[in-house]
Image 1 (cartoon, helix red, strand yellow):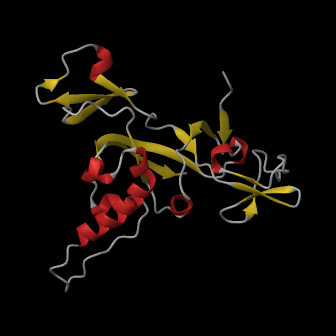
Image 2 (spheres, one colour):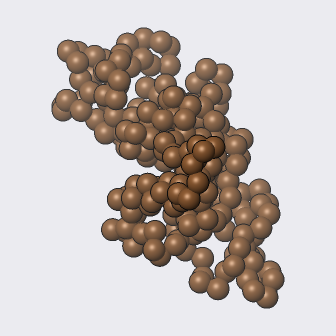
Length: 213
């Protein structure tokens, strides 16, 4: 087993899921505090809701109440544990002999605060392969719940880091919630529709809440 990495005094459990650049920017700016990820495999279609968590598992319910089968069917394993710390990965690039963060064109440093020398036979490195020692953004998981993607509210959309339309006191008759939902739907489908989990399918998702440390 690999030893755990400690960053700024926090023991790191692993990586956050991958984010597009707008998502990484929103996290760095404290505008994004939740992400929705498809539950794979999807629960059976007759599951109606998910209930309380038990450690790393969450109980799901049917129209009859709880599952009546064995333990493995009563619970779905959570992707992460609430309270653990994870790092946000981001793309890197070569500048001279050194490593820079591609998003912000800033120097990348290792865990000792030393500049990272470039060590790859190419000029860029995607976020998927970022070194843990180059991590500069640490997040703590604060909550996980299961829901349908279409359950999202305007407040949820804002927490996803998406700029939302707000209703002025003097403006009535415009469905701003629908407009905000359309913005989220466009982003969701651009990522998930080709995988078979588009908005119209209304898949079950993990809504993972976190805060930047």
